[in-house]
Structure formats: C-alpha cells, structure tokens
Amino acid sequence: MKRLVCFHLFNDFSGSPKVMRLVLGGLLESGEWKVEIVTSKGEGALSDLDGQKGVRMHRYAYRFSDNGVVTMLRYSWVQLYVFLLSFRYLLSRNTVFYINTILPVGAALAGRLMGKRVVYHYHENASAKGSFYRLLARAMQGLASEIVCVSAYQRSFLKREKGVYVVPNAAPESFTARLKPNPQEAFGRKRVLMLGSLKRYKGTQEFVELAEKMKGYAFELVLNETQENIDAWWKENGMTQPENLTVHARQKDVVPFYNRASVVLNLTNKNMAIETFGLTAIEAMSAGLPVIVPTVGGIAEIVEDGVNGYKTDVQELDKIEKQIGVLLENRELYTQLAQGAYEFAQHFNETKMTERIGKILMA
Image 1 (cartoon, one colour):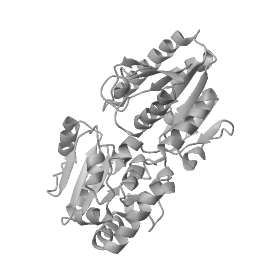
Image 2 (cartoon, rainbow, N blue to C red):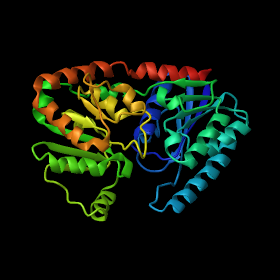
Image 3 (cartoon, rainbow, N blue to C red):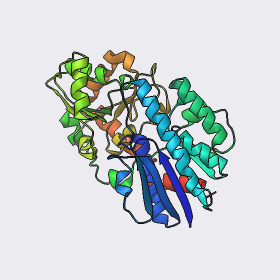
Image 4 (spheres, one colour):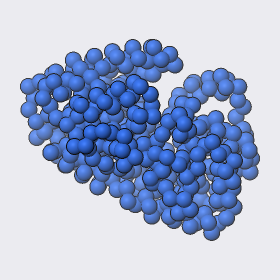
C-alpha cells in the first residue's frame, strides 16, 4: 500500500482545500492509499477526515494577519516546520508528497531532497499575483515530478512542458445530490448570490453597490470570513448595509444558499487577480443557476455568453446590473440559461476528476 503525504497551508472552506478533500475521499475509497495530512489547526474542508480509517493528521498553528510582515513571518515558520517534519518519511518507501497550491514549498523541497515523487496540485495563477507567487511557481516547476493544473488558461503560463496535466475541478456528488435545480421556482425568487471574501479584488464592495442600486431584488453574500472581520470591514469602509442585502460569515454548508438563489455572481477584478477556475460557478450551474463571471481566466472557460450565463467584468457594473434585470424579468430567457447551466455542469464529474488525479499520483 502506498503512503500519500498531503500538504496544505491553511485549512478553511475555500476552493483549494475543498478540491483536495474531494481527491482524498476518492483515493481512500480505493483502499490503495494510506493518507497523512499536514495542515493548519481549526475548522475547514479537511477537518472531517480527522479520525477516519487510513488517515493521520498533523496540525500546526497558522493564520493570516492584516500585517504583511507578520503573515510572512508566520508563513516562513510553517515552511521550516513542514521541511523538518517531512524528513520523518526519509526511509519510507512508496511515499508520494502531494502539495496542494504552490505555498507549501518547504515540504516540496524536502521531498525532492529525499528523492520522493512530488506532485503539485496548482490552483493559483502566479503570474497575476505578484513577484513572491511567481518565485514559488518557478520553484514548483523545478521541484515537481508532476503538476496538475485546473484549467488550460492556468497551464498556459507555465514554461515547463513535461509532466503537466490539466484536470478541471468538480463539485462533489454528495454536494450536488442535495441541490434542487428548478428554473421556474428560481426565477420567482429574484435572489442574487455571491460567495467570496473581503479581499479587495473579490468585488465585495461592488456587490454591495449593486444591492443598493437594485432595491427590487434580494441580495445574499456569503463570505469566507469571521463575523468579527465582517463587522470591522463595514466600519473601515464607512459603508451601510442595504436592507435588501443579507451577509453571512463563514459557512460549513453552502447548499442552502444555492437552493434559494436565482443567479450567482463572481465579481473578481481582472486587473487585480484572475480566477484560475471558479468552483463556485460550477456549483451554481449544478444547481441550475445562470452565472455572471469575468471575461478572462479559467472561470471564463466554463461560461458561454447567452448559453449558461454571461462574461462581464466588474468594471462594467452598469452592464451587470442590466444583465441581472433582464434575466430576472424574462422567464423564457432565464429558463434557457438555467437549463444550459445545468447541462454544462454535468461535464465536471467527481469520479472522472479523482480517477485522473489518482492515476497521476500512482504513476
């Protein structure tokens, strides 16, 4: 039996740990792997694996800080920790290091020095995130035995040719089975949903602005943040929450939000960051919901204008406002896009994704 040692910097409920959890679930079902997970303390997508048969967890203290220097010091400490921890597997045969995102570089370096296979699951677009991420991406291309990219767009920025695969993400079947696609009911709800964070490039302020402009519709915002951070954000930005906008702190389960929405937005500012995939768009389309997303990035690869949603940048907020209005007032158009969204989402299959990554890890 092979041992898979998995490294993920920060365990929360964002897209990358969700995808890792999905992959590990498929591998554990196969019965061919023993899994060890090295990640941060606290609740997140990987937490429910703790205590499962065939799984061992190693936890460390880590969290982000508003102070960039403090965050970098914490990050550096974690890299030293995982680098040293990794050498416990020096004499372990049939051991593969699975690096989720480009951030756990300490583990990748240790794995390479020990002659282990090091497989990266690359979720970011380093070229759009600054010099530090570009440095990590260069390190990945030198350290990795194989690299799994989540979109063709993301893969296009890598200079490395060999051992690079494109495997799009998928929503778990346990998740999609609880969704209730119903275009007629969704059309009647007139509810606009966005899931994101308080990072400036995620378009949270613009979502609030849309809610203020469109008083006739309900708006719902789910943030991967604590309530304390959300309260502070309102004060820091001098903003008042519109009456038609409901804001929720970090959620373990977002299915109920999709089941009461009509349309889902992604307002990531392409001038500040680019989505390499867009798992929330796949989740939304699996619920039979049209989406509005940016015009570039991996997320743009999964949306076709007028078929399953629209591609419009946050800089054209007036245009997005009109698109929402037209969608939620034209039942025939809405039903057409909702059906297109649901049909397209069926291509992103959990079993196919986990099988492909499993074969890469087994190679």
